Length: 143
Image (cartoon, rainbow, N blue to C red; front, side, top):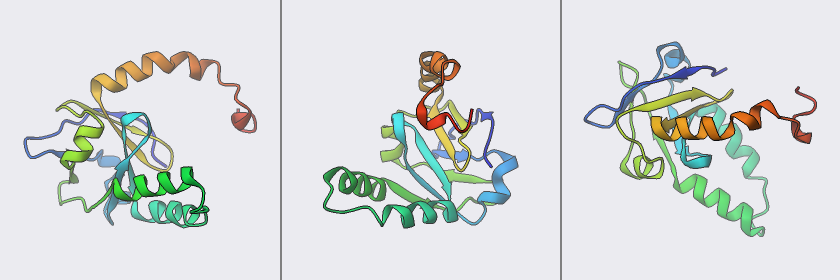
């Protein structure tokens, strides 16, 4: 389970050092994909494979499902962390997430999210009240 907030920096070669506590779980490889809200999602390979298996059952005749699957597949890059736990963030991913040197990695239960630090700060401030007022029907069994 991936929890917590971390503040790594992208180095000059656009490498991101993954949080030390998760490196063992991610050593087998990760899938870096476009996430929602202009963040990047970093999945362990096996978790991403489970997600793909579920998505493969979606009807390709549904335009929204088709667009989602295409964008997810086209926007995903497989990475294998190096001996220091670093992965390289490609230019299209950096552009999509507006990444600067200062980043935030947050745990998102079954995967990590990578945010530009300023974008994460804005998002956190804008959605703090949403967290406090969480009463959505989809959350009722969990709250």
